Length: 508
Image 1: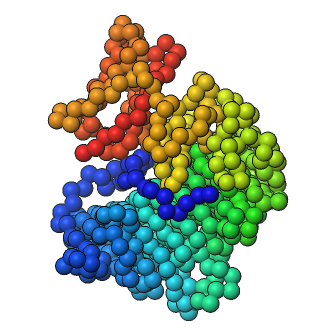
Image 2: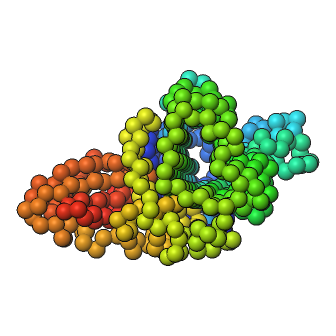
Image 3: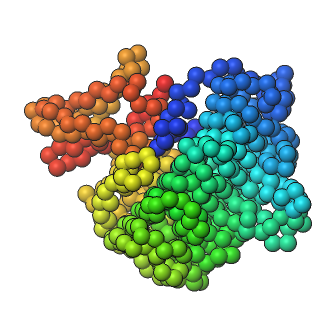
């Protein structure tokens, strides 16, 4: 069974957005310390004191406190063993923490939020985080048992704002039927990314058990849902697991997605049910494992007609029910190399009843996928539709390297995912040397002859191609780390029909 409180690592900066890259380059100024033994004992005590670019470090522990943050380029982080936990307090009928209009590029790390609740007369939508400013990044955080986990809309006119959520857990946020607070069941969610954002990235996270609302809901213009576990489990009563409410260019790639037996809506993914986003309305559903634990139902619901394309490749659809609720409503459907079976057992997953969707050695999903190519009509572009990572518990990822020469169908490559940061599939013939003093990384292929031509490709942790270069009669490539953002990358060298790949980390 999945755990809400597994060990987290500080997350990888596998971001697609230039705005997010800018966040990593900000030089933070004053460091404020908060904790029971500090001068400032509550986060709210420093919220009115911070200036643009400051860092607030909050000791692990529990704080019955809410805070409003109004400055930009803030780093708000829990420190110590475990999360810093803010609980049972709501500011201004909005949230435990509120990012005010005008605040931009705020990063929140290692924080836990629970117990946000307000009455129906006050709106019934108390949030762990209420974001009303510009861009923000959530990293290694835990939102649970709030009316809303995250509820956000960018401030007026800030249509270039971006949202990044990495390696975080969302659990049991929402409004139960008959709730005494008077909230409206079905209108509160694990996360709600409102309209107006340029893009939304959900990466390496675990969202489950939403109560009557959605596990993931977004109205952003461009959406990347990558390497996550999005599930109802046995007790979740969500409406949709993923709701891309206004459509727009969207990549849903390499996720574990499960519709549970207690769902209040029988569809698992909904796309474009109330479109106000400008065309194109293109959906890319690539290398996901979707499991339906209902006795009936639908994997996808696409209610509005569009002149654009559904690209659906290398997915597993396991369990009863039908693929579409009604018509797919796309003028072009590019669908191949998917595996659908009404019998979950027939897919030969390791332990589907306990949500382990790794492939066994007899799975029909092995070595039958197809190269999905690139996306050019999404912002930012281009984006490679070939997964380089795969989800592992809890709220983390490990590298995925194609074995056998042909990619497997679904979110996992056989052999099994081996656990937290285990990379047994990495090449032993590819060496990576780092020299922090010269800001250089040397990448060397041992089995590439010095008089042989090859090529090197470097991808970030979300699969976006960062560097591509020919290697002319050399087996060595020197990377200047000053030219790329901190984070986790995969180096791939191609030569003589073979491929060698290995993960490395850039830290600054």
